[in-house]
Amino acid sequence: MLDTQVARTDVRPVAVPRVPRASVPWLLGALGAVFGFTGSWIPSYWGDEAASVMSAERSWSSLTGLLGNIDAVHGVYYALLHVWVGAFGATELATRLPSAIAVGLMVAGTVFLVREFAVPRVAVIAGVVAIVLPRTTSMATETRSYAMGAAAAVWLTVLLVRLLRRRAGRGGWAGYAVAAAACMYLFLYLGLILLVHGLYVAIVYRDRVRAWLGSCAAALVLALPIIMLGYRQRSQIAFLARRDYTTLHNVLVSQWFGTTLVAVVGWLLIAAAVVAFVVAAARRGVSLPPAQRLAGLALAWLALPTTILLTGNAALSPMYNVRYLSFCVPAAAILIALGAEILGARLARPAQHVLPIALIAVLVIACLPVYTSQHTPWAKDGGSDWRAVAAYVSANATTGDAVLFDQTTKPSRDPRIMLSLYPSDFAGLRDVALAVPYAERTHLWDAVISNADAVAADRTLTSVWAMELPAAAGQPTDITMLLHHGFTLDTAQRINRTTVYHLTKE
Image 1 (tube, one colour):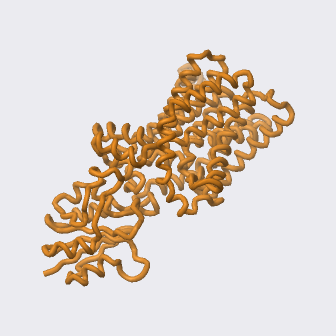
Image 2: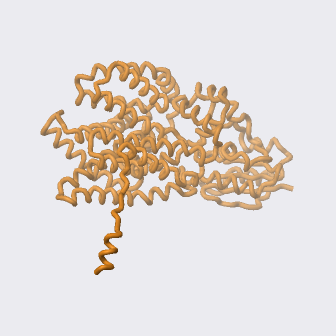
Image 3: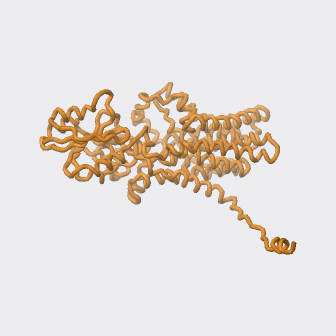
């Protein structure tokens, strides 16, 4: 007994350190950045990322020329990436890091926004959901502006909410106008968030509509140059007409969730939040409690931009792509968090606190296979294998050998892009089809002559490496052409979707 008593008197209570409330959003943001960045360097680059990297590696004068002809809507991102690449290089690890950082900022902003309306627990849940949603983790592994756009959208929304709450004066609304214009320069489709904001202000803060309208008008004036350039260069998204993107699967699954399982869990929780919002709105009109105001804002954010793009795509011109709506990810995370909380609130304690956590745990577990699949070597664009192909050529080619690239595919899948992405792997090899390098043009890609003309014009060729995608039938036309010119096929190495052929001639 004495020994037991002595043991008890020696026990000291363990003090559990409390995380300062102000630090929670930033801690979750840091977690989101790390989660998104981990393994982001594993997949090879693909066509859209190539446009970013190759544009960023241009000189300032070359980049200016490009943007005057095409891709002006991505100009701010390309300029930022130009500075970044100059400091940190153009590897997948280096160029995808800014997107992971932007994801962290988006997560932090989501938590800040939810805390304006709901209890901290809901804000934390929304932050966790924002971290794991497949659209988020996809953005974090992309050398594109979508993650930055999502971060910009949520922080602009935080700014709006605080301006409305504090009945800000002209200075605050001037800041909102500048920030909104900056968002559109970063990614033109972010202008759609203004419609969401306008609807929210018109319903909840009717006395502030005039102030918001004045600020919105100022933002549009400031953004007028990029709006006009985007309209003038609208043909650059004409390719959307040739892609069947407006499918039910894309809208309900691919847009946010990646797989059907994640979509089912996500939409069930979103539905719970929407039903609760509709019931509350029917009973109380615009006099909604804060959490339901947040639900209405998030619902408009999730649905309105999607509806506008789908309607415009059907009635006007091609404009829908699942990636273009990445800036709505915070809205999906917020509705999922609210849905989990609403379902839990119907139960008695402690189940009302346990159920939301359990539901989100199910969502997290369902997202993990998607996360894993996004971090494989062939994860991009249905199996882009450019880095592995370049490494194979580097290991096997000899200085002076010629390289040819499949010219039958669409430009964004053209294997010759790997020459610009992995130049060290092709050092000393002869690019016989090159006419004008991309950096000397006002277009994204190199200008080339046909492979047949290049081979016919150069009688000195004795060793050729040809990188080809699968032919519709039989062997690739380049191989047939080389055999006709007296070459002998030595090896054919399939990497993933690309086959590397080596042919020689005596």
